[in-house]
Length: 467
Image (cartoon, rainbow, N blue to C red; front, side):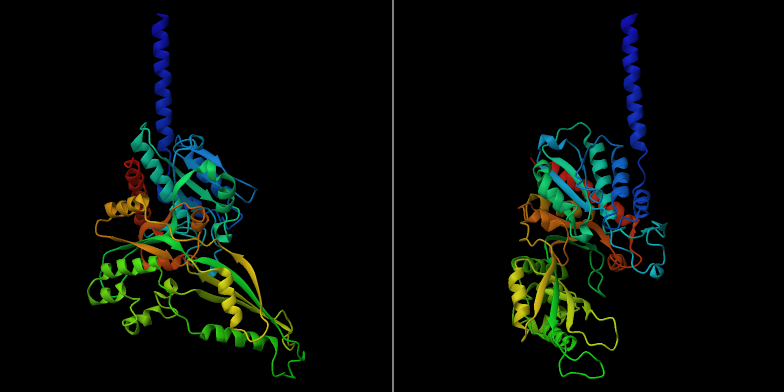
């Protein structure tokens, strides 16, 4: 009698545990609802603690292995993994960031920037695409993959790294994790933000969806330029030359200087793939943009402000001008400008700065305010092919091309360590969605959110199938 009682007691415990686990997993929110909740937390850089805790709580509903990589109260970095990191399995890392940029002028938004409002088949608010939308795609994909694989033993670990501070340079997030925990994380590949899918990319021409997977990105360099010119101080006695005038003359020369486009192997491969995508005579011209014979016919697409300009030129934007004077009738002895520069892969910072100096016929002080890591492009590996395959599985009519991302992210922090990184939010976005990033009325369509989840889930299976 005793042994039967023990048997039924054990059976009861197992059933209760099973039902409890089932109930626990069933409490997960719909992806759009969870994204809405994340958006409602205004996690501007340095304020990621609450949103990190929300993701920890949601991930805890699954038998994942969770690790915190924090250095301070303003540094919250969470790693969610299928297996314990201590096993040191080759790790496939999905990367996103928890911080967002400020909303700017709130009055310009049609819907409050931190409302997370769900309407018209979209989720609205700061971070809906950059980058909480990507975080939700990756988390729900890993949940779906875990459900499907059940107890199967995999050769790879799969992890999601949610980091702080990407929008402010990555020092409290990816840089900290790489400097302190890279060996434990053991990444063999990283999939982060970068490219995306876009519907009908050729204006006025119906065309299949096009997805760009970034293999490289520009490095960011913020410079302060300063000139000094002692002159009479009163605005009523104008000197022939003063600091503001000198600086404006220099900036005019800088903006008007003739420059040559630079085509490296990645951009040539990108334009070749894009030309194949376009087809016809127009596609032929795009495939051979570096042919000097054809340049007069295509150069208009590479002029400043045009679509291809950032891919073949180092760019700079004057973001600040100041004389340090607050009185309207006083002439300052110093003038300062801040440049936001984006350098092509392979461009050396010192050489770029020396070019700026050579344009000045007088002494120009140049100070580096901040610089992001520069790195060579990632090679196309089996992991790139697995990503491209997953996109094609989800959208058979779509096309995938390698891509140079014209901005900078945390991706290069891993690339400089020799880890291949592929950047893409694998969902089709409209021009309105793309234009909303770092802008007013940031938004993501719910079907795009689910597309990204499906692609990431397929990516997991594609990698798991490789031995």
